[in-house]
Length: 222
Image (cartoon, rainbow, N blue to C red):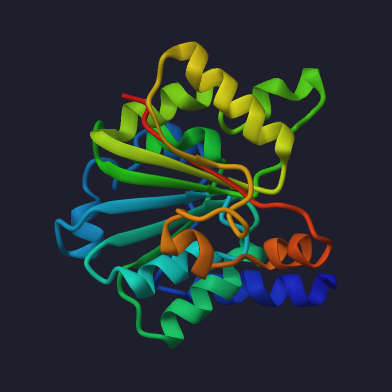
């Protein structure tokens, strides 16, 4: 993407009513919507997050399927989720919002038990050992999710990385956390939730063209 195109998207994001772009200091220092997201959406519907949302395919796709839930995509790269934000506005989806910030600040953005569900779609598996702290299902991240999720809340991991799939399953079993569903090839094995099969990301389509299996885990952290 050219720098001019990026700049144009950044400028458009500034005008979108469904995009919030706080500074790190504003998030850590007392984010005004923390524990008050019902005031933003003007309802008390369940809140679902897509962390590392990229172009926002799941944020928007799920919002279309479940109009009685609120969906928030979080990513530091605003030029990417510009696409989802624009689609949500043009599609008149009031239950969609995007936040441009670091994912590790999720527990500063949401109050205790404010979130009903989390989606992690095709994250960087951070395979090198020294990158373990950046894996989005490591113990530190799981603790952050636990803080914001309701007791019955779930986390969904959809990835093309067999490493990430295996690492997460092993960690969950080691911690004694409940795995509700696991599938190492969702398009070949039956039983995957419809939203796992019916919504595909930009990168997922590329992986499928290469014949890579797509894996999925749904689990609880409480």
